[in-house]
Structure formats: C-alpha cells, structure tokens
Amino acid sequence: MHKILVVDDDNDMCLLLTRFLTRNGYTVASANSGLTAIEWMKKNKPDLVLCDFRLDDTTGVELLGKIKEMHPQAAVIIITGYSDVKDAVEVMKLGAYDYITKPLFPDEILLTIKKALSAEPKENTIPKQSQTNTTAANNKSKAPGSYYITGDSPEFATIVKQIDLVAPTNFSVIIYGESGSGKEEIAQQIHQRSKRADKPFVAIDCGSLSKELAGSELFGHEKGAFTGALNQKIGSLEIANEGTVFLDEIANLSYDIQVSLLRVVQERKIRRVGGNKDIDIDVRIIIASNEKLWDAARAGKFREDLYHRFNEFSIEVPSLRERKEDIILFATHFLKLTNAELGKDVKGFTKEVEDVLNNYIWYGNLRELKNVIKRATLLTDGDYVEVKSLPFEINNFYKLQFESPSSSGIVKTESSPASTNGNSTPQIPYEHKLKTANLDAEYEVILDALKQSNFNKSKAAKLLNVDRKTLYNKMRQFKEFNMD
Image (cartoon, rainbow, N blue to C red; front, side, top):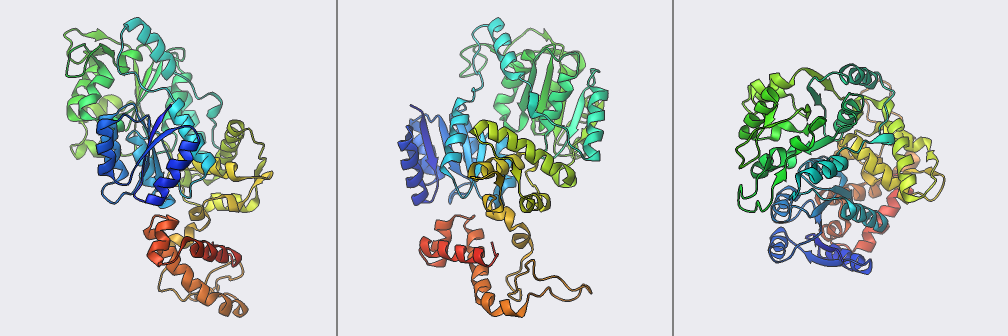
C-alpha cells in the first residue's frame, strides 16, 4: 500500500485530504508545517508528498529541496492557487512531479496521484552495464508521438523550418524559451528527424540536480566513489551514447560541472566520478535555457567557452501569449488527449470559452494550458466545455490584474461600453447601480481576502470573520450579477 504525506497548514484541508485518500486505499500521514513534515520524514519513507505551496514556516521550493535530499524517489505534487502558477512551474523544474490548483476536485487529485505513483522512478543503482544501457535507453527515449503538433502561427512555422534544417546535422543546438513553452518537445523532434532517431534520447532537468549529485547523474560513478555509492552507476551521457542528450536549464549547473561538460564537448570523453578511465562517447547535445546564455556568461554565471561550443545553432520559442493563433489549436489537442485519458467525448469549447482562453495571459505557457483543459474536461458534463468549468482566476483575469480597491464601485460589464473619448470612466446603466453598488463593495473585500489566503476559502472566511457557508453564498450571489 502506497504511503502518502499530506503537508498543509490548514488543519481542515489536512483532515479532509487524509480521510479522502484513506478511503481510496492509501496509507496517509499529515503535517501542518514544513518542520513537522521534515521530522516525520526522518523516521518514515513516503512514496508521495502532497504539499501546499505556501506554508507558514517555509515555501514549497524549500520543502521540495528537503524532500528530494531525504527521499529522492518520492514523487511530489504541489497544491497551489492560480496566482502562484508561475512559481509552481518553477517548482516542477526543481523536481516536483506536477501541481494541482485550488479549488481541489477529488477526481483530479486521484488521477494526478495515480499517474505520479505509476511513473517509473529514476534508477540510482546499476548492477550490470549492458542491462542498464538497454533498459534506461528504452525508457528515456520514448518519443512524444501524437503528442507533438505544430502551431498555426508564423512564429511556429519558422521553428518547424529551423527543426528541419538543423535535425540532419550533428550541430549542438540551444533552445531558448520560457518554462512550459515546449522546449523538450522541440528537442525530441530534432532527435526524431535526425540520423540518430533509432538511438536513445535522454532528457535531463539540470535545475533539479543538486551540486553534489549532478556529476553522478551526468557522468555516472564507480562503486565506493562516495558515501552511499554502493553500486556502479552509468551516467545519462553514457546512456545516450550514439543518440541525443537534452540538458534543460543548463545555466543551473555549477562551475565545476560546466568544466567537466566542456571536456565532453571538446574531446567526446567522459570519466565517471571516482573512476580513473576515460570512456569515449558519441552524443549530440541539445541544451535549453529560459535566459540568454550570452548574458549569463557576461555576468559570470556561465562559462563563455562552453557557450561558444554550444552556440552552433539556436532556436527561440515564443511564449504562448505571443502566438495567440495557437491557443485554441493546442487547447483542442489537449482536449483530445484528456478525452482519451478520461474516457469522455467532449466535442469542443463554447465561443465564450474560446474568448476567455484567447484573452488570458498564459504565464505557464503550454503546461498551464494543458492543466486548465484537463480540469475543465473533467468538470464538463455536456458536449462542450463551458465557462463555469474554467478556474475563477482565468475567468476574472483582467479584474484581478487591474482592479483598484479605491475604484468608484462600478463594475465594467458587457453592458457598460467605454466612452469613445478615452477620458471618461466606463459606466453601466443607471438601473443596475443601486442593485450592485453595495454588492460590489463586498466583492472587493472578499476578493482581497481570497488573494491574501491564496484563494483558500477556509482561510478567507477566517480573515473575513464569517463561516464558509456565508462566503459560498456571497460568491454565488456575485455570479448572479456576472461579477465572477
């Protein structure tokens, strides 16, 4: 039976999740602080940790580091509000399996947990080299297959041409782009269209590698090389021999590792940690970064000679908000994938939903869009995804971004067009003003409490000194006036 640790400073949430997961066949422990969680993990080994991003005594980033240090094999799922999506994406780069957003839905929680627990963990020990090369290569070289689609935007058409141009060569490639923009999928496409397509493709998230473990992960180690090295380990570069290795967020590697990597690029040789023999390798290296490596080199964060070695060809992936034409295309694709995963047959999106998706600024890019579509599909009972299935924060994005607590109390709706001179405040019909003035003032106060509590309704109710039922009733009232 899998053992799950729930970490949340909301005692009600801890109790609710503990009971729910226990009923679904898991052994569950809970902790209401990061310190309590760390003390529990000193004596117990979790298979999965379900952790709130914001805790009173620590953050999801700090606790994730401790979890990976104490139990590297444990899967970590972060619970977050949509205001923290950018941070959650960063946490995934550091080794979290996935994140789920509030409000939480039972089916979504179970689905994410099952996928995390069924995902194959990384191999830490390799008893036999020949067996390792075959197994690890097969596991890590799985192509995205039907997952990969090309966008309709001119920017993406340029990327496809660049992939076709560079794929047949042995050039090293730098892929620039924000987190979640699809850099790894592009690297896989380069590999699949190259002469190395039938050889391993190994992807490594450098942001999740600690300074101590990076050398072992990349180059491997010999038995007894350091405390805990009980067996020989074949590194990812050696596993990828004759194939392609993808190093994501390479700027996070330490200076010492960068020096060793420079030798790989120059001499095509590696040496395992604790070893005394050079090993010849033939591997194509594709790297990715969300910051310009030349700027990092000038700032002393990245070796300039290593940058020049890698900079044979570069591809820049625009963010999703820069290619609006692709949003519905990818949303439809993610809908098809989710239909297959959930056994549903949702046919598409209403026009109103398409407008909301097109107007939202996707901080988490394709990764965030995929999660939103998965959740919306899960909540859809009819043939088309409706606005009510989208998260509160996406439906109210512009109000959350630009509203002012000192505003006049007037809500801008579809029936309140702005004046054409650009100087007047948008107005709504007078017959609605008395009805909505007091309600709008309450809306501002409740919205502020929800922001402060990271959209945790229990915490927001406490801040407002009301019970949760009263808060829910008020939120339903807002919906009647199109204020949600």
